[in-house]
Length: 346
Ligand code: NCD
Image (cartoon, rainbow, N blue to C red; front, side):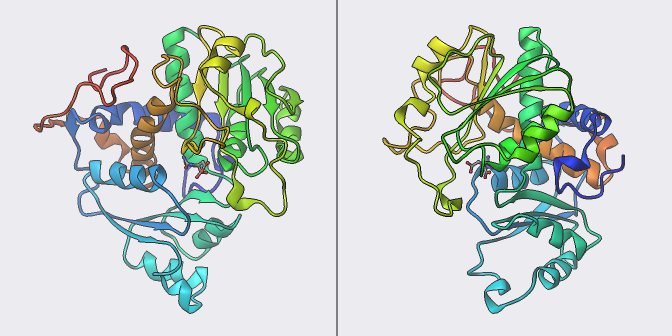
């Protein structure tokens, strides 16, 4: 499978994922600031974000810069010519004259695919409304693979709980599709009433032989859980839905970790978490618990996105060659609550 664009996880098969992850592993010394790579020197990324973003926009940009490239970007509709009525087609074709690859985030499902139709330059979907977020699912899977290999576990046969807004959460839509490429998983889907996983995605996972259990409460016990993946309620996408069912019991916090999860359960969340007191999102009291992989997950975004760029632009072999050492000072650990086993030197 030759990757031309990355619009959906449907563009990926297990071989393509394994090849990407091998490139991401080769990119780790650069992502962790030990080595320097100039494979994309002279290349330009167009980062087009028509929706709010911190980590996706910044980590795509950082990944491109760490490969030696430069970044041009535009944020929101207000300062783009779309505010003057320019079509997606024209915008995409014009920007293709300036850059070598496009990353696009847009509030409408399918809009990023329209960008891809208007250009021969590779386009990566950085999130299309409630549709998909394939690069996030890739970095989630990469992180999970790292966590499981440290714990001596496999993805095949794992028990995975997806928690929160499964209707509008595009990260879980893409993740279910990628995890469904493995064998014999047990999915427990826990969403407030009205925010359940779309039926088509449940059917796809069931067709591929996985077991699906759905719940509207986080209170019931969860046995032998390997991964708890929590998501934010996507209020900005609501079209009349109520959050009445999204009660404090949906809060994924230290008490949840200690009562519902085992000593080796991995806890992930794509972030951002909504830190408002009444948000019922992921708590902060679990940050220093070694099971909490949320920052290892966001850090993985750089290596995985470097692998995507290197593969789409055909320079992946350059990451296998000896690379120059980075010479600037860097910390050994990135954050004060990082797990003892996680350093930039790994
Ligand atoms: C997610 C997104 O934008 O879909 N964030 C991200 O890219 N890591 C999740 C969210 O906004 O809740």
